[in-house]
Amino acid sequence: MRYYPVHLDIQNRNCLVVGGGAVGTRKVVTLLDCGGNVTVISPVISNQLRDFAVSGLIKLRERAYQSSDINGMFLVIGATDNEGLNRQISSDADHLNTLCNIADRPEICNFILPSIVRRDDLVITISTSGKSPALAKKLRKTLEHQYGKEYGVFLKLMGAIRKKLLNQSHEPEAHKHLFEKLIAADPIAMIREGKTAEIDALLFDILGQGYNFEKLTRS
Image (cartoon, rainbow, N blue to C red; front, side, top):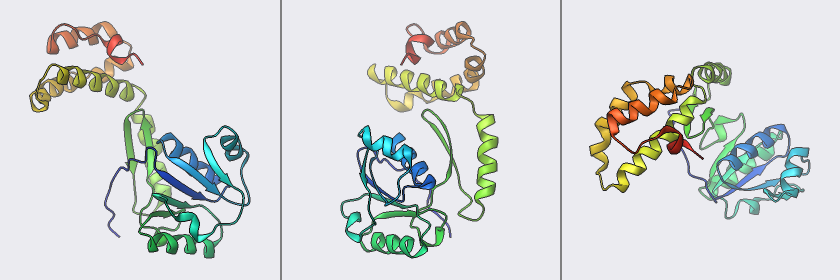
């Protein structure tokens, strides 16, 4: 199987998770992190999911799955240990052309979930096309050490600079050489080492006045 890689925007979209155990809970956490409107259906619910429901973060249905539960859903995840139920969820989703992932069952999914390394807006995904989750996990741990939180800060800086340049009516293509110079100067290492004065000097040298690291990266 050759998968088409894509990053989905699920902000405010309806997402269904069938299964309320440890696996389902992990799926819910990721969906919430990405802004999905999450409904969980399961007769058995983890304490964390119950807390989410009490806080209003998810909708909770403590009962068995019904085929009609998929209606109106953008994305469905099956996270149960019942093979027959997982296949029913997959079949129901396929009938409605709905995105569907069944945990650990790539053969009945129309998309699979990669291992993820997230540093704020930097998202690195690793997939072995379902052949070896163990290798994907090993690669994720390697990349987690290689890409620290400084990459997230750097992306915040770059995004703020880009926005400021666009507000000055610059064409996006005109920024390309500026960003290439910034990246080549390795400000990521400066961020890692806390050298804000050197970063400000670099910004002034490449962009001119009005670019301050602390102001641009302030939340």
